[in-house]
Image 1 (tube, protein in one colour):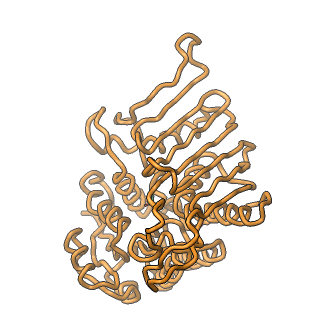
Image 2 (cartoon, rainbow, N blue to C red):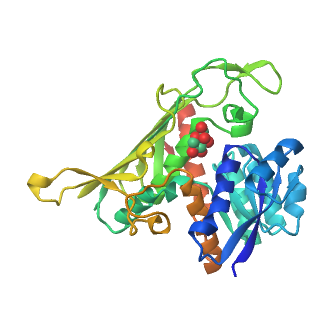
Image 3 (cartoon, rainbow, N blue to C red):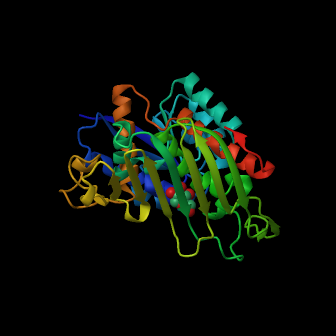
Length: 378
Ligand code: SOE
């Protein structure tokens, strides 16, 4: 009989749904886990909307004050799915109450905040993880295995993009549901914290730490109506960001993100060039890993497109039969499964707050460099 892991969810937006789906499906596909999530309570300020969310996803109860949820004795783990400016306060309260934390990315508004959060969870010794979900797309996890096995040899280049186009209209307000991502007071930054943070997390995981960066950012639409005040206010987020970096292993990095790439909805791609082989991955074709191996016989050498759906590919043995693929939402199921497994083993579930702080450090260095125009150490 599995032990219950009682979840308290704060927030009910897009991510609240993605995480709830992960909790709901995990036991069907990972039946041997020692812990099974139970959706105990959902919490948000709007009582009616919270009730609808709770009924839709199967939460047993609702709260409208996150402090009450954190204090509840029947909650083991709190999922923080609210705008970034609330991550720190809620995390500190959870740590003080001895609750485990699953926090939406990015960890915090700044390195200083993130450091405080790390100290709080480490002092309280509560399990913690940050939802950088793309690590757990099977093709990305497989790339990690290939790199760790040394199949690429020495790595020379790491290239990543995250391109979207949903904020091009000047009529789009800042602030409010979904649109808080455009409001620096709630989000901290624009594409750097929202999109590049994913690319940086994956890059650090696959290729190790970053030494220094040089960056540029742009805010294309300088003023937008604020949903809360109804007034036209200055936009302080970065709409686009590009940076170069050096990794600790001597390789060079090139990263770009924007919400102004007309035609691209969520095009996260990366390419890694090593001494023996190269890897390419594309979120729009997420179950494929492109692989080029210079050690192949010369006249057969070329890019292979590996369909990551076999039982011996990461996570895939848990799903359907070989050849049948899974999607975006499964990365969250995998993170829940790994969190439950690490609880059983008493090991950390990466990315922990401390791991996510490394990403935060790169983000802060990128934004700092864009301001000064100087190379900046991480
Ligand atoms: C923004 O549009 C967003 O939803 C991010 O907030 C997510 O983290 C990313 O995975 C998809 O895009």
